[in-house]
Image 1: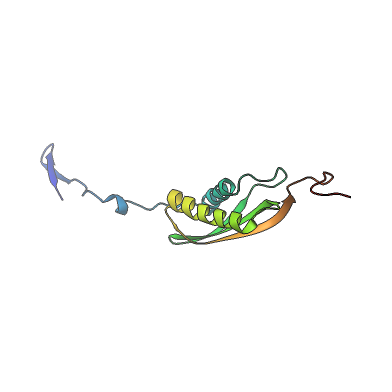
Image 2 (image 1 turned 120 degrees about the horizontal axis):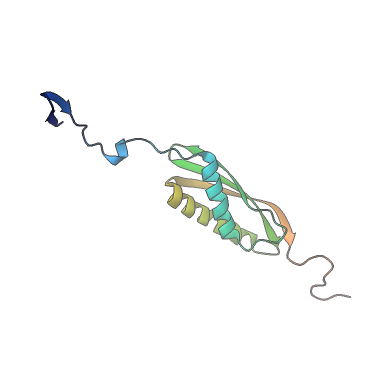
Length: 127
């Protein structure tokens, strides 16, 4: 510590320099992490069917790790497994980069499939 002489002889101590990591803590609300995960899922799953609801996410945060569950609707037919894998990868990447937490698990739950072609329009051969 450094002391400084001011005024009529009283000594005051200057605060020691505190490292940035020791100045305090950053707490990111679970709902913020969930919104970031939902946005990442939306980016990865695009384009979504017109009738599809926006992806939703729920999270469980424990220390510096977050487990994510994403609920989404996809069009059909499509490669559902590949689209879910893309959502998982993108959510891990974006949440990790933006929040600074490890994402050991992303569960993707497909809530509904929407036909790519509206009913009433003939596809393929008809009789």
